[in-house]
Length: 505
Image 1 (cartoon, rainbow, N blue to C red):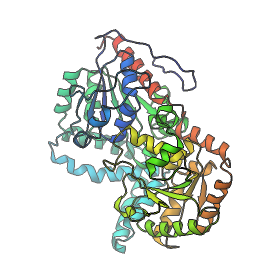
Image 2: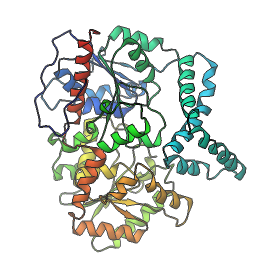
Image 3: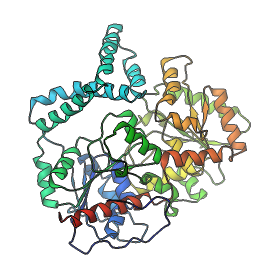
Image 4: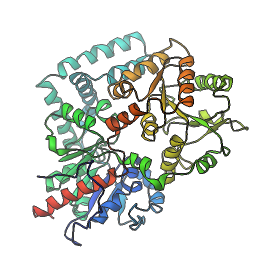
């Protein structure tokens, strides 16, 4: 029986679990940068090594070539004063996508779309409906009708035995179309004792998981994003799964009923470790300096949406900044605009003012995505020292709540009753965001007057909704105590020990 320390247990010092050379390395598969952040920047890789386990990372070529991985890892120091990751090429290699060897793959995308529609209908999820409407909104009527008719087939596909057939057929196509030999060669060379899929959804990771299953090596799938289970219809088969919270665990077990209950572990999420750890906390003076503000400045944090979903948002922001300047309680406040990492960042640069009333703080100076630990610290401290955080349906609501900063969510667009206005309002009814709204830990604004009113109320009383914010963080993020990476490392060590015990290493 594999078990892991509960999140509520007291702090402990990691003990060296393994004698040298008794277990193969832990292999981390990092297709997305979020995996690198959670494994490297959080110190998880050093926590694994503190157990006596070697560790190797396979990262996508994009992350390797843009130095989001190697340059950042050279400066990371574990919270336990272990040796920093050194960027050694022997420990950091390329995660190779599987070569396609069959024309059967042409059937994959249309069948995957059908499976997605069926998955959402089967689990009564709303994400697909709203996304489909948004993406089809400017299409000719006949295309929209054709799409609606095809989507109605999801009623049939959501029922057994058709649903099982869909999933089985998709797996069969992938197994017949992908060459997993490159993954097999890397696995045979490294001989890992545990394989960790850090995004638990990337096609680049799947061949390594298949080979691990064939070799009897335990696998751990990490649910990367808040909406991974609600917005996507597939997670690969793993022996164990790591999720953020009990709420997310309940969702995974509901959507994938064949997964054993004791194989899903609510550990908390390493991305929130930065919010709780002192080494990532700056003074207010240092934060203001890094944001380009003056000592003593107070500011409102405005976190943007993405251009694809909020195309007219700059027009809304113009009105927002004007209203702030006209509101007596807010006119002395600065506005820090933090663009979404996947937004068109240039559309915000024009708002920066010479007098510093509006500053634009990009997620990273080096790239759109986070580049290193300092970018994480910038996120944490920008949230922590803000009087209020306002945003469009973003996980920034959780980032702010995790440091007890009040949150106001924008649920309207610049043009009233427009398609964008409808989308901005209905998004909050999405399955993954609905609990955030229902918690009372955030306030909703459905027009500009309500947005101003809620912000003013928080500026006057920051403690308003404090208890609800705390409950929201526990419910959605799991434990935010700076030790999620350590708990996952403990789980990995348990899986490796079980593997060694079975005589497979």
